[in-house]
Length: 269
Image (cartoon, rainbow, N blue to C red; front, side, top):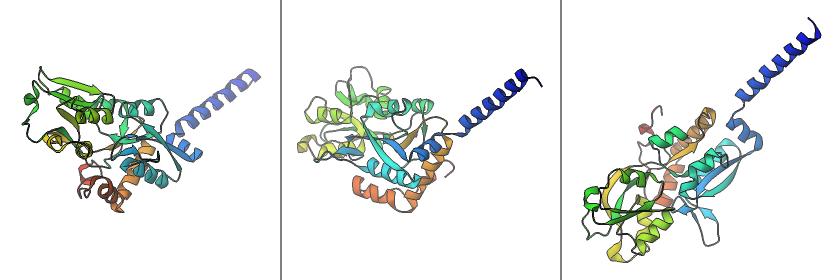
């Protein structure tokens, strides 16, 4: 074999090894190699993520992020986000995973992968008890607000008839404040945001459920194709369910016990 062929053969071996190394290396390996996982958590969505009076971020999702990092054996770096940034921070590589009151939709499933559910919630339209509103058709002639890009906003947008003033706000906090200040008559949101609003508003405008949109559990978002990382995250969620962590979080932040059959609703679990 002449020198040219020897060089070509060596280059081919180097190329194959490089490709194999690239294929074998995945996000879980990178996270463990760096010893840190960057987790996007909400900063504007009580009780899942919010900033306290001492400017510390806390909440259900924050505690869950710390738990996941510990189970993976790495340090947790929290990346505070608002609702509209959750998927973009993941896709741009600014976060490794997202634990931020993230619901699963067909559109989102085209962009990212999801863990099994780790938190039970439901979404609906809420408003004053004395104002009848049995269904989306009843919204005609009224105003309703929601966080732009949220599952609730997307679902209601498909149901509302013409003649509805549908206001989209940058995040949940702004949508909640709009309802509190009377800028909207109703609010479309998750149940626990409505409960938070109820503590800050006059009694006659305390938001009660008018109609439910759907049960909307929260999931952890991951980049497409990171199957080993997703398996590790799922294993941590299952452990959190069985060791009582999820129930403690539900009691502390949601005032309820976690449904005993939540994992049974997940395929393959």
